[in-house]
Amino acid sequence: MQAYQKSLRERIEDALIALVMLGAMAVTLYPFIYVFSLSVSDPQEVAKMSVWLFPKGFSLEAYKRAFSNPGLFTSYYNTIWYTVVGTGVNVAMTVLAGFTLSRRTFSSRHVIMMLIAFTMFFGGGLIPEYLLIKNLGLFDTRWAIILPSAASAFLIIMARTFFQEIPESLYESAYIDGANDAQIMWKIAIPLSKPILAVLALFYAVAHWNSYFPAMIYLTDPKLQPMQLYLMKLLIQEDNTMMLGSLTGFDRVLQSLSIKYAVIIIVILPIVLIYPFLQRFFIKGVMIGSVKG
Image (cartoon, rainbow, N blue to C red; front, side, top):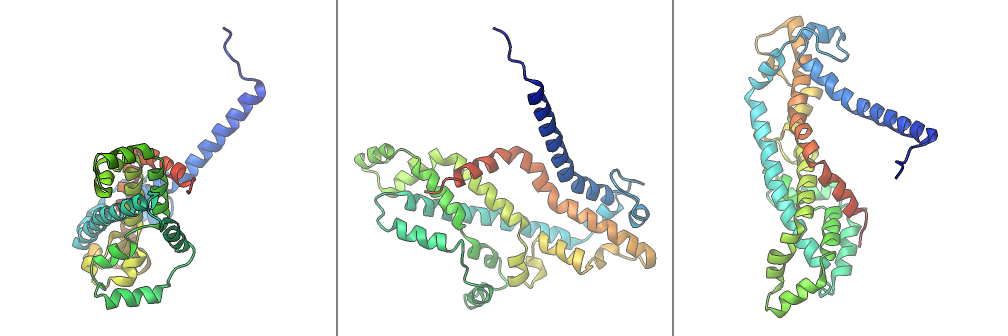
C-alpha cells in the first residue's frame, strides 16, 4: 500500500502552525527565563538593564538574602497550609454537592442548581462578606481564607456532570443489595471518579496557591499571611528591610532589585515544576466543564 504523502499546501500549513506554536512557546517562556536570569545575575548588571536572556555575572546572593528572612518561611508554610487544607475542604464539599445534585431521586436538584448557577453571575458584595466574616469571629484566622471559598459553583457543575455519566444501573443494583446513598457514594461513585477528583484537586490547589486578595482583606497578622501577600508587599511596598541587612546606599538599591526577582522565582517555581506532569488533568477538566447538564 502506497504511503500517503502530504501535498505542498499541507506541508506549508504544518510549517506555519509549527512556527506559530514555537512563537507562542517563546512568548510564554521568555518572562520566566528573563526573571530567573535577573535573579541570578550580578546586581549591577541588573541595575544597568543589560540582562535580556542569559544571566550576567552569576550570583546567588539574592537567594541567600531572601532565605535569610524568617518571614519568607512563615509565609511559605502558610501558603502550603492553605493549599493543602483548603483543597481538602473544597474537594469534599464539591463531591458531596455534585453527587447529590446528580441524583434523579433528589426532587429539588433543579432549583438548587439554578441557585448555584446564579452565584456565578451575581455576588453578595465585599462589604457584606467582610461583615459576615467579622461577626462569625473568623476575622484574622486561617478559616477566613478556607470557609468562604469552600466550594466553587463552576466545579460543582463540573462534578455533577461527571457523576451523571456513571450508569444508573450501578446505583440500582446497589439499592437492591440494601445500600444507602452514603454507601453508594463512598463505595461506587468515588472509586469511579478518580479523574474528576484529580481535576478538582488541581483546580482548587492552583487557585489557593495563587490567591492573595482574601488574605489582604481578612488577615492583618503577618504570621498568618500567605506567600503571595508577602510577595505583593515586597514588590509594591518595598518591604525588604530584613533581607537587606546592613547594606546602605547604592548597594541597598542594587540588591533590592535582585531580591525581588529571586522571591518571584521562589513563589512560582513549585507550580512551574508540577504543572507539566498534571497538564492532562487541566485538559480533562476543560472537556468535562464544556458540557453542563
